[in-house]
Image (cartoon, rainbow, N blue to C red):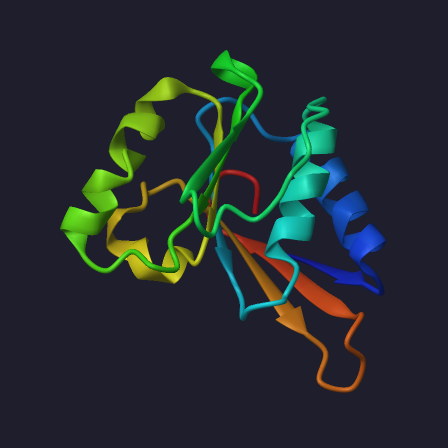
Length: 144
């Protein structure tokens, strides 16, 4: 397990940018944390660390955004509205597991039973006393 501390959205992005250098095609990242915890900020940092220059935004309404292509692609999922296997299947999630690239999944709690065994879990906790501070915990997978 690794624990990082961030004092701003910029620091969260930098932590993710550095972390991205350890990732490889096929890795699955499952975010845990409440709304506003910094999941999308972390994904912005991942994209930068992977050398992607795309504008990263929350995929809330699209369900998935793709940044880059092929083995270096980043697939950013939002599973907030996914309720059950049929919903998950309709997102194409299982196909993306075979595409290569890296999957980053917000609201992974909603699909926990469908995540591969080597999933990397990243928990983002907000500080109750300072809205800019975050504790970022990395566990599971081959990198934790």
